[in-house]
Length: 451
Image (cartoon, rainbow, N blue to C red; front, side, top):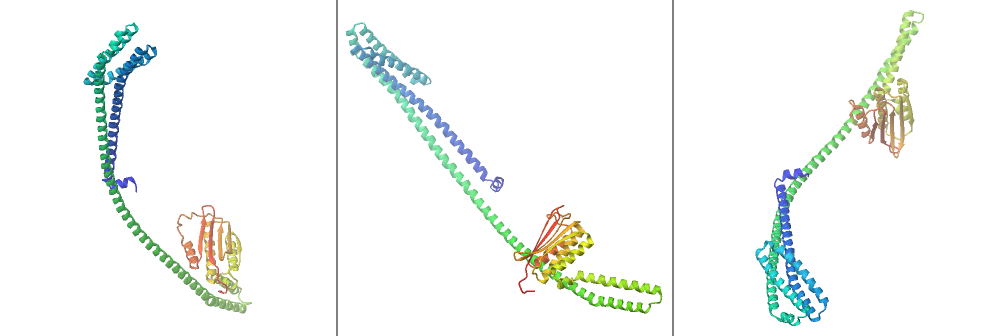
């Protein structure tokens, strides 16, 4: 079934399918981009929270490095201090940009700037006093509560920023969960619509399939009926043809017998009477003798013509000399009268008398058609046994014809075919324009002792 037929027979299915596809794509794309946006936001929130934590940790690292230096007076403790100062600068750069659009958070970051700058100044001042040898002043500055208060304020501000970012993370996760939930609901709804569309399509398809199956069944019933009728008509035509050919042969036999018995007797009697009259007129009128001589010749020609007609109607040689001799005589007469070279390859084969007559008539009809239409120069007639059957072929090198085109006068070929089929045989014709014609007939051999 083509797509056009499906759409034509199911006008609702196609719009529903298109709507489901478009809606599915819409839900999918919307959920995708919303999720991507929220995940990007969450990544930025996570980076900001990490920067805040790094900022607080860097201040602690700087203080630890400063105190280690003060206690040991070793320069390697200044390495973590310097690294912490660099990390603090990088963190503030990121946080200033990140919170530039959030006034409240930007205010907190500003306070952090102030506190951390003050703390770093304190640490730097302590190390300066230490380096100048003012150890007591440096120690008192370290032991004062100023640094403690600044660190406490610093922890509160960083905790506030971390809390804000944590709230944003929770909000983003909630929105993602809502998006996924809406996506699941949308996909479930669209899946239901798709299943409904599929169910409607399958139901319609099932109904159409049942309808087509019923139509096929009806067509098959009608086809079987027609084939049976054709088979019966073919059998009837074959039987009718056999009956007509049998009646025709019987009529020919009766006519030949009448011609032989009655007309032959009359012509022979007239010839004898003419011979007696001629013998009595010897020495008489020359003109009368001449006319009697012409009359005797005419009677002889009439008797010969009668014999030829009788042979055409019912070949006596077929029953007296056999099929092979009869076909040789037929081929020789045809070659003599038409000038066409005839090549015979004839074997003695076991055939019923009726089948022998069919072979004779078939060859007779074939050479008649060759005379009328083929314009051949050579004809080959073969008769031989093949695997329990008898094969008869008549081939010529004439004009030939297209076997796919029904000839205008095909009754001779049809008559041949029906006569052969009536004897339980088959007939095949092979021909092409300019390549001659081959007629092949297969007949069953007669059973032993059936003659």
